[in-house]
Amino acid sequence: MNILVIDSDQGLQEYYTNLMESEFQNVQITFRKTARQAMEYLPSHEVDVAITETAVGDMDIFEFIEQLRVRRIPVIVISADYTERLIVETLRAGALDFVSKNNIKLGLVPNIITRCLLEADRWTRIQEFSQSLPHREAWIKLNQRAREFLQIERQERERSNLQHRKEAADQVFIDGQSYYINYLYLQLLIPPETSRSMDERHYVEYVRRHLQRLIDIVPQHNGAVWTRKEDAAFFAFSEEEALSALLAALEMRSASRLAAFTNDSSGDPVQIRIGIAGSKTIYREDKGRIYSEGLNLAAHLALYGSQTDSVCITAGVYEQLNQRSRKYFFKAPQAFEGHTIYCFEYLA
Image (tube, rainbow, N blue to C red; front, side, top):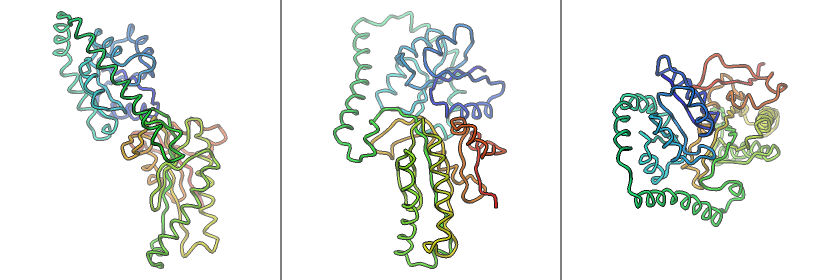
C-alpha cells in the first residue's frame, strides 16, 4: 500500500510513519510539503490514498483535491484548521473524509484509511459517473463564491484579532494563522515532605516563587510564556530558536539545583523535568482551542525522563541543534508516542 502525505509539519512525519507501519503491512509512506511537490511526484508513482493538510503551499486546496480526484486517488483531509465551512467545502470538492488534528491521537486515522481503501472502487465509479454530468454554469459561479467566503472568514478573524488583542505576548500571533513553534514544558516536582511542612498559603507562595524564578529566565533566551499553571508552565520559542529553548532549559535546571543550597529551600529541594518539542500550530486567541502536536508532546516528555532534572527533546528539536549541543544527549532506546526521543539527564 502506497500512502502520500502532504503536510509541511515535519514533526508529524515520524508519528505518521510509526502509526502506519504499526497498523498496516507492506506500507510505503511518502511525504511532500506542498501540493506542487506532490503533483511532480504523482506522474511516475502509484498512490493508493493521499492524506493532505488544507494548507498546501501556493495551490488552492480545492484545486489540489480536484487534481487528485481526476487521477482517481482517494483523498483524506487531516487539518489543524477545521471550521465548519472548510469541512463542508473539502468534502463537496471530493475528499472522502475530514479529520481534525485534534483527534489524530484517538486511534481514528487507521480506521479512516481502511474505510477509504474499501470504498475506493465504488468511489471511483461514482467519480466517473459524476464527471459525465457537467455542472451548470450558474452552479459553478455559486460554488466559487462559497469557497471565496473562506478567505473572507479568515480575514475577518485576523481583523478581529488585531482589534481585540490585549496581551503583549499575543501581538506576535494572528488568529487563524499557522506558525512553527518550539514548545518548552516545565514541571516542578515538589517533595511531599515540603508540602506537609507548610500550611496552604505558605505552600502556594513557595511554589509560586520558585516557578517565577525559573519563568524569569525564559525572556533572556528569546522565549515567551505560553500558559502558566500552579506548578508548571509552557513556553514558546520560534522555529529558529531551538538552541535558545535548550539553553533556557539548562539554565532552569542549574537554577533549580542552585536553589537547593539556598535558604529558600525547605526540606528536600524542588526538582524539575522539562520536555521540548516543536510543531506547526494554528494560533487561536482562545488558547484552549489550540491543537498542537508539539504542545502536547512537550508536556508528555516532561514525565518521560527516568530521572529528575531531566531534559527530553524530540528528534526534530535534536536535528535543529548544533553538533556541540547534540553530544550531551543520548538517544532513548524506544520510541515514545511514535517519536524518537533524546535525553539530557543528570548523572551523579
